[in-house]
Amino acid sequence: MDIKDTYIKFFESKGHKYIPSSGVIPENDPTSLFTTAGMQPLVPYLLGEKHPEGTRLVDVQKCFRTNDLDEIGDTTHHTFFEMLGNWSLGDYFKKESISWSFELLTKHFNIPVQKLAVTVFEGEGNIPRDDESAQIWQSLGISKKRISYLGKDDNFWTVGGVGPCGPDTEIFYWRSTEPVPEKHDPNDERWVEIWNNVFMQYYLDENGNVSELKQKNVDTGMGVERITAVLEGKDDNYKTSIWQDVINKIEEISGKKYDDEVYTKAMRIVADHIRAVVMISGDDAGIKPSNTDQGYVLRRIIRRMVRYAKMLDIDINSDWDTVLAQMIITKYEKYYQELTRNNEVILSVLKNEKTKFNRTLEKGLKEFEKIKKSLTGKEINKDLAFKLYDTYGFPIELTEELAKEEGLSVDIKGFEEKFKEHQEKSRTASAGKFKGGLASDGVMETKYHTATHLLNAALKEVVNKDVHQMGSNITAERMRFDFSCDHKLTDEEKKKTEELVNKWISEGIDVTHEIMTKEEALKSGAECMFIEKYPEEVTVYSIGNISKELCGGPHVKNTRELGHFKIKKEEASSAGVRRIKAILE
Image (cartoon, rainbow, N blue to C red; front, top):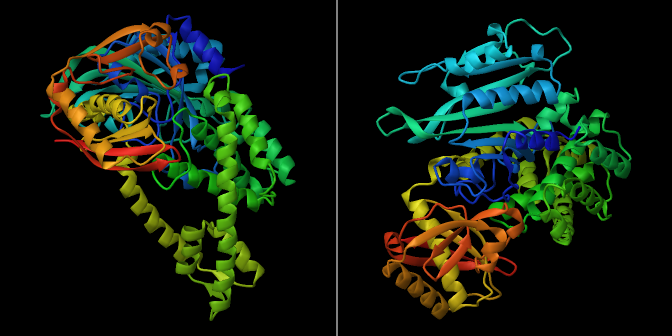
């Protein structure tokens, strides 16, 4: 059974329109480096904007979570993962959502009812208990003893402050060969969550008051990797059909066995990371390895993958990475056609970064020799071990292995303490980058979103008509805009660009939008770099006769709302791509 196809076809039979996955960089959540959840691309529509494809949607969204890379290598964590989602934008609500989830799981995925349990919101303060969801589950055949009422931390969705919020119901599967207990115990880890249905029912104001939303939405999410493991009866994701061909190929290339515990973790990391690399570098956003933002994450993943391939005694200079990458491309191009378009780019990124890291690796080995000669005792201390890790990319396992060969030991405990300290600093520094949700579409973010359209139009007029947006990142304090350009902007070009944007702002031009087919949008002259990722019907935003772009919003109503535009910095982003940082005063 093709789980993704079954899921999509089921919801299409319930009146849902299939929409293609958005790119790896979220358009509507400037606080995240990558799309981390299925709901991120649909933010404007969850807030009330009309979606071109209607009020019932279904998708498979490519997602990334890269702030916990060190957990990759166990049986369940992945850098890249796919999220199945079905959506109601002010259409159906709890009854249909819960009934259809139950129908798909029991009738199409053939999961026995007796292996299911659910949790619902127990109520708190002025937000009532969600008895409605519990009653629907009971009417479908879920025993009262298998329904657990839990608090806000477990079964209530919120953006963390003012905005839409609501209860959710989570569906659990008994993953064990032992008899299914009569009563659901939320603390028993053998009950594995497989699906989450969020009901955006309320609005929370700044005083903590809750009111009913006019547009009530349903947002569901089910991880492809987890449901596949459940349906195939595996407790190790890498033993499912998703990974088996890749793992088998790694075994063949390395001459090692996955079931040999010495090599299991390394094989998982190589398999996981090659898939993530293909998905990031194959995206139309044009991400290349660099020392900042998404490019830094891509570089880190490639280098980590190469290190672990080396531990498997794979000849790093062979074409092992190309072979694995091509397998991933072939496997996923049905859903993500950009992988076919960008095939050569993916292989080029891998080859170039691998070559660069090989040089770093050699330097690291020379540094190890220096450390070895400088030691007065028989132990490599925590600072030296961490230097090898942080400066040369040596995992502690590699340092340990090299030390053992030389009859030396390593202060592992000290290293782990130092590493944990480094990790906490990194997490604190990147916390804002990785939080997701609707909270980011405030007044200033909306202004900056519109300003990117004006900047794009101004650059075309001042620099070159072939300038195109290559990416953007917006916060409440500033905007960052990447664009295709083969030279550093002159002071005159920057001045003219800034003046032109401010001229358009002062003219008080209305911002309008209309829904049309992709073909009509292109014929009308609307700009869109990656037309393939959009559904058949699209939203086109126009700023007078100045700018016309396919976009999901949100935007101001008139340019006069933007204030004064000022370019703070212009710099290189990557080869052939420049970056402007600007503010609205």
